[in-house]
Figure 1 (cartoon, rainbow, N blue to C red):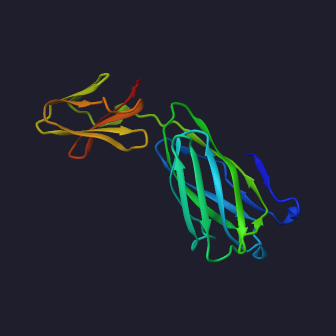
Figure 2 (cartoon, one colour):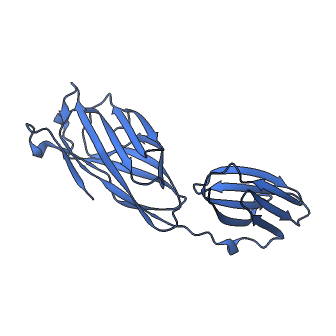
Length: 235
């Protein structure tokens, strides 16, 4: 954990608020609620708002929501995430000044599934807090990281079935020997459905529009999983 000191020279160090981005872990495919804490909050600080510019070192953590913590429940909040630069901007403003320590805000991440365990750093590029008349409040920041662990897919753990899948460069060929149709899903590593098809006896699912990377194909009958396979597309 690396600590940054963001404080005006004429303000005393002992008065600084400490913002803590903790170290934690998550498994690939999870949804992670990541709390950011505020410590050493004094009533005389009269904190009414702030802004954070955050860099995320790897896209295995994708923020989809930012919401208030237990000490900022009545505050307004807005955020923007740039998925090309992995940068998150958060702005907060309140009708009630902070009076105590606690969770300042939460970031909800979709966690990707890396091939090997990967440490993703959450780096605060810049930030500030302001009081009721827009004066800066001195603060320090402890940046954190999330250790993302790989989750393997046990292809043999599914119910035995008369269904075969052949993955090609452009199509997946599904052979169904059941007496009724099956549903075929193509999933991204975060669980998002990218393709959905209904196969009666034999059919193909086009892979042409899928991006490069890791995907999963799932075959179901009456919502019962029959088969899951992982495949990698190289474009």
